[in-house]
Image (cartoon, rainbow, N blue to C red):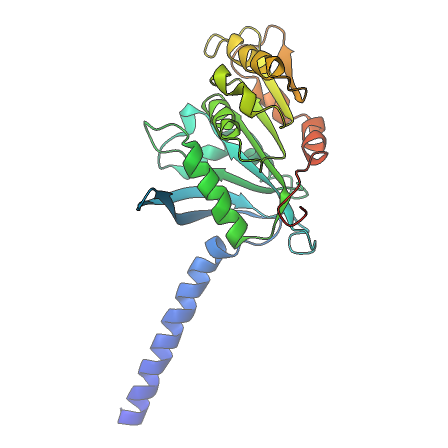
Length: 259
């Protein structure tokens, strides 16, 4: 083999490796509309003068019309329950939106379903930072950011609302609960909570107290639907109801660009 041929072979090998690398990572970095893929988000959270590095493994689904709207796509953040924690991302598809979008390619939301680590609970600061990351990397309609979750994810949904960021257009917490003292922070957010009235895992009173606290603070945008005789699984019936998605999309928030 001549030196020129050897140099050409090395260049070809480098190009091949780079192309292969890019193709391997393009699925996570640039998912195709109408298909749900796994991805990893890495970002920093400021804590005073210090920074915490955060890594979030998640499923992401882009709607079929992604990129065609000047305003961007509505974002739906789904938080799973305690049983889906760990490092086995496929189990996150067990319930709710990540399960639905595998067969419903016309789902209108840019749907993101992160996985919480084993032994952990949803950290609202991390999830708000995750929303920041998504806004920076995808074409998202900032006036249409929605949050929903079941059981532990229902608690996570309430905890995000408690931060009173003014960015959540509407939320659907299912069989969860929160701190009623934070009800005053949620008076401006449309909330539709769901709970089985025979739930032996998370008492229905957890949802009732949150709605009562919001109303006591003169909030008029929160409501609760109870399923008579239903135990902990109040999410299957809820997520199978097309009306909840119409309800979400009927709400927007005023963005900084609009003010």
